[in-house]
Image (cartoon, rainbow, N blue to C red; front, side, top):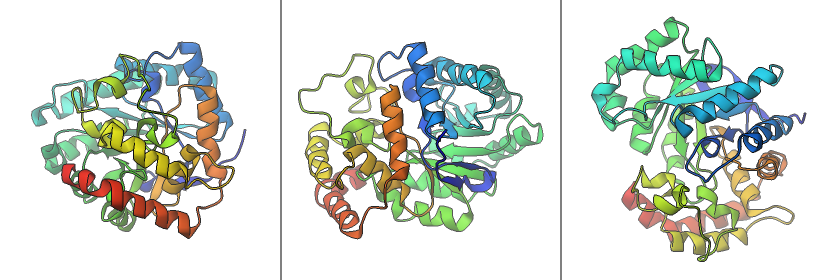
Length: 330
């Protein structure tokens, strides 16, 4: 097993690999992934030094959690910290975020993952009023007291939601979209999180694959892939698909970004390295649908830091091509 850089995940006090594994694609919404392939991806990630898996009870209606539970039962020596999420299986109304529902959702995730106590549970992009509810966070504190969960966190859609959550003393970490095409969290969220001792988990790090530089205007995505059916937010928040960027605009920006990759580095690895370098980031969680993708993603942790001229060029690209449309929407 390769040793990867470890960073403390905020108020959990636990160390996790700087590159983790997002497992949405092992459950649903990215096209079909066979069970044997999914387990091979998990194994390739661990062998490459990953000690952090991110999942959710809604990914494949629990399939992702169950696959992780099965894998870790067979590999108790893997030392993996598992963060799951809850809330998206219910109608998105603030009144559904109550202790009884939390316990029921929690029981299901513990059964899926095969554990008594979950390492970390994140509210899964709930309605904005939830972040301001004392009752919600009292209920989460109760789950900790009952030893159902070791810690809790939030996954957010907006910077405003992130800042509200960071002010809560029990929130261990914040998961937020962050990549070279979505840089607004650098302005306030990451500095506030650092000051409060809250971890940052960066999701959608490759803008749903745009930053890999592999897609063209002729690329066809499977009908059950959210990159085909959610480009305008038809099924869930638009930001989860291509970071909310118009596909044509994203292709043009991706071509420019690819030209910034240092010699010997792929555009995808360059994007992940850019995120790793942002002060306050605990872990970045790219997904992988194959062993090769998992190994390539994890290799970004071994890249040399990007030089200042590359960082400046990424900033200029964002300001020129993407800032106005992204900030107007979020």
